[in-house]
Image (cartoon, rainbow, N blue to C red; front, side, top):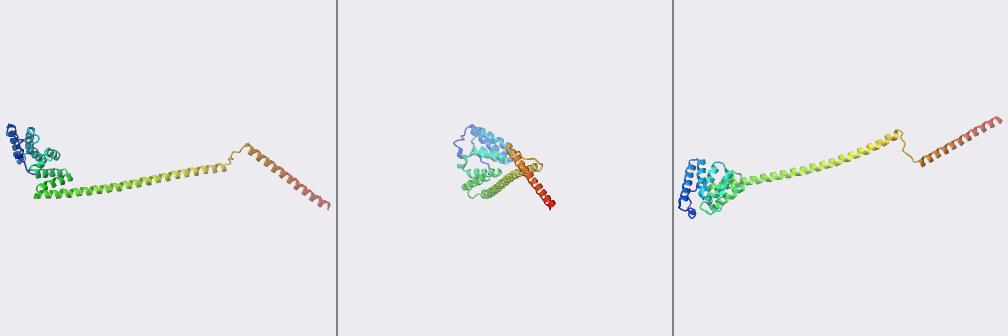
Length: 245
């Protein structure tokens, strides 16, 4: 994070020389002294006191964000810098403001925001080597993140395709199992019919068919009887001829 901002001359129209403004300056300076001693909690309190008097104070917000950053409260540091996003970019501290925005973004691993912030810082101070190094680092991390996301997406697509193929195979297997069950049912029915026939169970017939079968049997018996009579008569004739002879 870039260093502290003291009393800003470009806000002279806002910070008049009345008593409130004097208190505001004193509290910001008191916070700055605590910050240099690394008494960040005490500095935090002083900057917040200054913000009670002027919530849009450039110095109080900027320095409070630095203090929050040192206390690893990156989310609140970002919100604090956000409060001066309208005035800071057009101030003499614009490069430092964007630099600190980039630092907060790196801490939160928001690589896209970090790249954008350091780029803005370099546009205002091209000679800042730290900003260049951080910009290169954030850009590399962003590329790695995007590549990882692409790999994850490709892996997810492959997994989805595999799941679809598995589902299709399962559907085909279910259809095959159903067909096998139907075939087995048909085979069981055929076997039952064969067993019924082998056990002597006769299929049911109509009365008309039964009458016709009876008549056919009777006709066959009559024919057989006539044949037997003829055979007996023929044998008798043979004996008679032998006897007469």
